[in-house]
Each structure stands twice: as C-alpha cells, then as structure tokens.
Length: 133
Length: 150
Length: 104
Ligand code: SF4
Ligand code: SF4
Ligand code: SF4
Image (cartoon, rainbow over all chains, first blue to last red; front, side):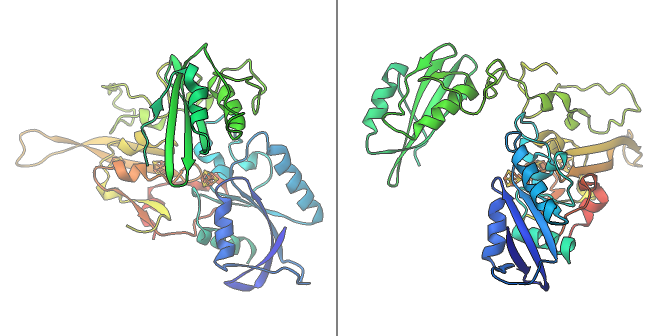
C-alpha cells in the first residue's frame, strides 16, 4: 500500500492499494510517473481515504486473493473500491471467458466504476477526485 | 517483420528447434484448423524474427522442444491443455478439469455467448410491432462458431 | 479525431442500419428503431425510413476497440475527449443516446 497526494487536490492524501492484475495497471503507473499522483512515502499524516484499486482482469483463480486483500484492508478502516477498467467492471474483453469473474463487484462492494480499456491516467485521477475529495 | 512461417513436418519439429540454436524462443502457441492444430513457434535473434509452424492431427502428438529452448516449457503445457494437442508429457498447467473440452478448440462453446441474447439479431426498423419482418439473412454473431447450438 | 476518451453518437446521422451493433465484439451496443412512411410531394410512392428510438452503449463492457466507429458508413459515431466518466453504479454505465450525443 502506498500513500499518494493528488497533484490537483494537494490537501488530500490517499492510501492506494493497487491490485494490478493486468494491463490497466500500467495506467496507474503512468499516473504516478506523470506526477499526477505524488508519492507521500515517509510522511506522518494519516490518509484521508483508503482506496483499493482493482486494475485488471479478475480470474476465478485469483478471486480468493482479491477477496483477502479487501478483507485485510477493511480490517484497518473504511475502504473504497474502484473498479478500474472494463475487466474489473464487467469482465471486459473477457466477458465470455469461463475463467474470468464478470466484474469484481461479484466479490467485493465497489464504490465507483471507471470504464475504459484501459481508462487513461486522467480518468483515474478524475475518479479518485470524485471519490476522495 | 517476416510473418510467413516456415512449415515443417511434425517429425522434424525438434530438428527445426535445434537449428534455431542461438535464437530466443519468444512465443509458442497454436491455431485450431478444425481437424488439426497448427503449432507455431516464434524465435528472435537480435532484430531478426523467424516463425516455424507444424500441423498436428487432433489425435496426434508432438515432441517437446523444452530441453532445447527452456522457454517452451510453459507454452507447451499451456498449448497442450488449451488446444487439446499432445506436446511432450502434457503435464497440466492451468486446467485440472480435463474432462471438459479444450477451451481454445473452436467447437468448445463459450457459454456466455450462447446464453446472452445477441443485440445484433434485431433488424433495422423492426420494433416488433409490424410482426412480419423476418430476417432476410441469418447473421452469425461475432465470436460465435457455427457448430455451437444457439 | 479527438483522443480516445469516449465514443459519441450523432443521432441525426444514424440510419439505424445495425452495422455497429452487429460488428461489436463485446455485444455492448443495443439499438431500437421503427419504420415510418414519409410522403414526398414529388415522389410516386411513399418512402419508408428507419427512425432511431434508442441507442445504448454499455461502457462497462466496451473494450474501446473503435470497430463501431470504423464500420459506421455514415460517420455517426466518433471519439470524443471526455475522461471524467466514472459512475457509482454499474447500471449507470449503460449510456443512452442523450448521453452519447452530449459527450464533450
Ligand atoms: S480493461 Fe482492457 S486494458 Fe484493462 S486490464 Fe482489461 S484488457 Fe487490459
Ligand atoms: S468500441 Fe468496440 S466494444 Fe466498444 S462499442 Fe464500439 S465496437 Fe463495441
Ligand atoms: S453503423 Fe452508424 S448508422 Fe449504422 S446503426 Fe451504427 S451508428 Fe447508426
């Protein structure tokens, strides 16, 4: 889990747990790389919000791990789940695949859906702002 | 990039892999041709690309090349179980439910595509009220094979 | 062409031909239309046209492949630049033609 500050909302610190399961995760890295998400490593300030970001394809094989990650995070306090991308939202391009969970909301409660395949870093930031600001 | 593969006989598959000594095996996968499986290998050396292909009958088998190109180990097991073609030992990798049909065979239906009504079945201008607006041409939805029961 | 933010519909240009609906690999476009007769003074027979009633893209499923945009013979679909399109409910990602027409 890494703490970030949103460049456009400097007052907001968000604890982000990125479950990078497939290609969508690269967009999260792009958001960090561009500075839109600024790492807050080593600060004492407690986060305003904890966000579990599911970025990628959830297979049935990985479903228990996703559920565990959410349970662990939820033990610490309230967690908002962002379904980032078509795969996490509905199965996306793999909606017809027997090995893929057709949307992570079948496993854990989702606070916000960000469609796209993949959604760009701008869409991630826009969704985070709506969720935590 | 050269994309026309060099086709070899299944018996020569290992020899063709041996001849690629010094190349890196980048990819090994297959295509279901409905009576046989085309197994394809892609090799890279520097900026050079090379494709090798062989055709294995549904009930046939192919020798493993993973001792020559260790990168083949995962792909051979994956290709074996996904396409239902025997490569080497055919040790299961991802699927352990081998009583079900190989998912990458074209005859294996995707249940979601069979159960979900296809939105393209409607005809232009047909709102169901006129009744007699039978489709002139039966169109098959993308991603659906003719042998699947719809 | 705008950046690949969202797919927008220009309803006036859509003839309800169903091409995009049929080509979409994700099956995420649905379209409802009906036929109407238009009488033209100079035409010998009344002409039948398709009238678009509803056009929906399920953005939760859409894989942003752009095939629908490519196949539309009437350029009634296009990329637009919106990026702030997240929703709090899954069903709200089913976006009808009012939303599809209004994307910025
Ligand atoms: S939504 Fe698209 S880009 Fe994102 S993980 Fe799925 S396939 Fe990859
Ligand atoms: S972009 Fe692709 S998946 Fe999305 S509506 Fe168009 S054809 Fe369907
Ligand atoms: S292909 Fe174009 S004209 Fe035809 S139904 Fe789709 S949007 Fe309308």
